[in-house]
Amino acid sequence: MPRSEEAEAWSNAVYAAIQEVPYGKVTSYGHIALLLGEPQRPRQVGVCLKSLPNAESGLHYNSATVPWQRVVNTKGMISHRGPGSAERQAQALRLEGVEVRSDSMGEFHVDFSRYGWFPKHLPSEEGDGESEDSDDSE
DNA sequence: CAAGTGACCGGGG
DNA sequence: CCCCCGGCCACTT
Picture (cartoon, protein in one colour):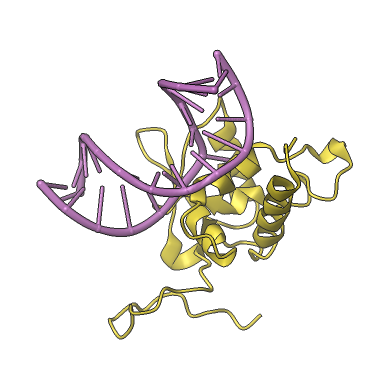
């Protein structure tokens, strides 16, 4: 559990932001941090997910209400943090219709050009042929 | 209390 | 394209 109010506020913000990720879409830790106005702290986003309570916890934010599976790293890959954890995440995404393919190295990969959700794009990067991310109109 | 680690990211070599 | 390094900050040893 968080040690301070500030830490709890941060984790709550992280969970709320992740809930904004649409069903069947994925985003990155870094982008969640960006949405929270803290682009320099993608690691803290992961820390919060690590401490995400179980569905049985009874808390408002838990593994059943927060789509933790929709967050991967900036390379679109799922890192193996624990035994079977990556497979669990991959499976959860597949149930949402997200195509997750595994390479020979046992790592799972998602195609951002098809399932990526990045509502905020950095300025000063415009004009070049980036024919992706058409910003869904909900 | 100090040092190490990590569900990460971007830049430089 | 791959590897290494600094930064960030909570949590662990």
